[in-house]
Image (cartoon, rainbow, N blue to C red; front, side):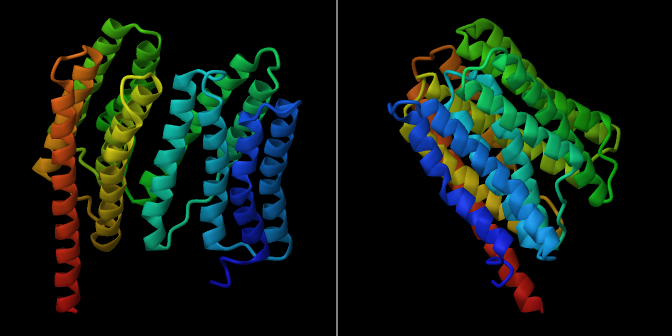
Length: 346
């Protein structure tokens, strides 16, 4: 508790609490709102370097600080991207937020093992490029689209670098055909969402079909080439999670789904991520089940139904929601039961 409320961490917490003020000015109709919101965004971004400086100078660097500091950065960046959609292309926002979500979950996954993967130089360059690009968009500076594209590319590269480091810390070779296919699938998600946002449904359907087929292909290649790894399972699950959640959110932003559906699917997704994290931290294994594969498969079918405007798409949404919640409750029960059994053995 003392570590949590050290001076550097206090600055980080204040930075998070001030994000709504930035959003307020960004969305307001006040005079010079863009200049004010850009100024606040820059101040909040610079405070990241300030709390790091204080932590190093006063030797108050803590493990929890290494976790909450990048999370605060990601919340600020995500808030800016979400409320700038329209000025920023949807796919760019989705790529950056998806990467940040994956890495944040990865950090949380390692937290119970008392392993902290600190931000790398490439990660810091990524953050700087995102800040510059967002400020350029807010102020409508010329070439802001190219600055944002550069930030997206650096974000993707730094994310892959982080995942490779994570795999090495798990003691596994992560550079194999299966994980390369999974990466290919992950990179196709923005292309799919771009096609949908531009109304090119036929091309989007082709891209989504390739995504689904590659999901099956990476599993087949891992088994045939004996390249099944714990990292690969986590990476595959993260990619599935990213595809489904980013698609649901994007479909809402495009007007294909009501916001209520976003809430319906977000709850079991978060709950399942937490239960799987708990299981992994305790047993160093990734839980998988036929029902989980069925849930993903039905989710794919629902996405296709929405793309082609299938007449029974509402009924299919209800079906996948029921399957997802059944899967969630069963997984929670199994995890709690396994923990209870483990406690009794001790």
